[in-house]
Length: 139
Image 1: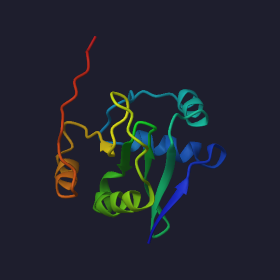
Image 2: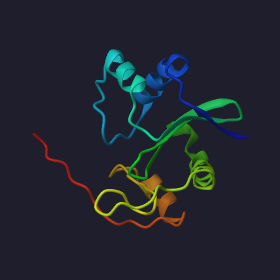
Image 3: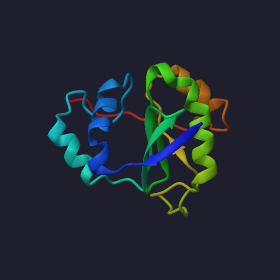
């Protein structure tokens, strides 16, 4: 059974740090995140919704939804088979916020690391279409 547990700072900060450091693919964080920085981020997170994901009472990852209608799902590598079910449950239980032109899409978006080919295939087979590639300035 799949279960979403709303993130609570006191209960989950250590688990979230562990999961962060186990990620194979990343987009927005530096792999050298210190626990103090992580702890501060968790305490004041900017997300609309942030949950731990459990499958059969085993912690398998997290997801968050931003106020810009972006979904991020992070499942530990050896549990990726759960990704389609997690995505489906999110889409059943959450709806996108109303569109704000140039700020928020009317639909949910998912950012995918460039080298996560498995995730790309899952998304393409789940009614998501690829709409852009994003580039960052490397300094």
